Image 1 (cartoon, rainbow, N blue to C red):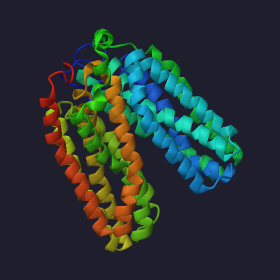
Image 2: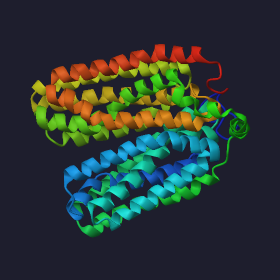
Image 3: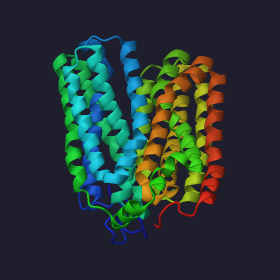
Image 4: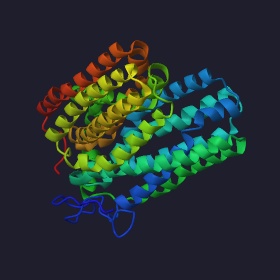
Length: 434
């Protein structure tokens, strides 16, 4: 199936007439930059998908650690990762996102491989803090990497395409991980860990080979000549930080799907347990089908602002539908939950596309590393806070909790517009020419 190319935007290699998803008679894109980016994304996502279903079980069932202790260790590791995002972004500005990203991904692979050596809680803490911290720090660097290798005109659509690749590859990896989970032997767990570690090593070797886009070579001179204070502007940029916080609130929707809905289905509805898996499949399929198309329409600031506003309102609507599912019979609860999940998918693809656009267009082009580090750290913080927020609202208080959560989403989405207007008034240096 061939994706319709962008009609007027330049291609990723600077040529005209082809969007990033255009293919050269095969599964991979024709563009010389997006092709290797697709490969490294698919490889790494496949490894992550393999590992996610059984990571916690390995440490509890095989290593023998307490589940609460494992959860605490992962929380500590997540906090380290959030804190590491900004300095990692600054390093990307100084030494290049390709080089720093390669080191972070390679380090994540080594730390992940060390899981097979864990035999005590202290060793677990060291390994999980290193692996999770490096992986989360790489998220902002990854955003800066796209700023280096992709032209501004097609950058958001390319990120949407790579997100589609991520979803598909993680879905395949998750299915294979379920097989290892069913085997349930130490050897199966260790094999999955080794494969996940290798999934970081290959991309780490590919990253330095990605060619810089022409605008990035020019920006390298600007970065070197920029005053030292400008290089850390992102941590003092109140309008940008406000947009980052609002985006982080909308990011909570991911843990709503991964944590909140399974708990809601089991504890508060009459729907069968397999409904949680059904909703995840619906999410993966629809995101893969919609994300690129939506991103094409939200690649400019005004459209991105509208996308974020609609995302908040749609999330509020999804929360209302989820709340109604509690009083229904199994025959009606499953369709209701599925309808809510479909509404949430539209919110998800809108907020993802809008967030990518605003994260780039509101940044100082001379310091993309720090800006993407701040934006990525905000998203990571939202992901970390999500499970607790969903649990204390919807799961603990039912319909009232869903109403509160929906109101928070709606308010965050609607507040993006004034925050962006503030950011655009704050300085003409924002963004870079498409």
